[in-house]
Length: 95
Image (cartoon, rainbow, N blue to C red; front, side, top):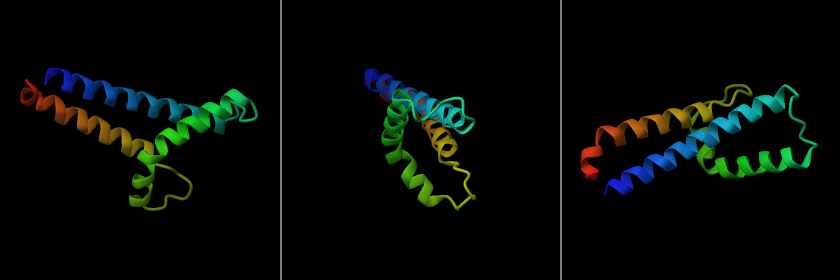
């Protein structure tokens, strides 16, 4: 069962990293540092959007409209951190 705990923590860490990359990339695109007309940038952006939309979609439906401000990555990160804390505090159940 220790392996299951470690795999869950690894997956949560990977998801957290992908969300942070998506967040940083969105700011770089907004400020014009990255150009969406470059094929590699467009492919990475499209891939990240497709990967994270199943996670962001339900969160966006629950949150009120914020006038163009998307708080779903922040809520998703808080959820991942909370899940990691819950798993760590209950790690004894996996042994």
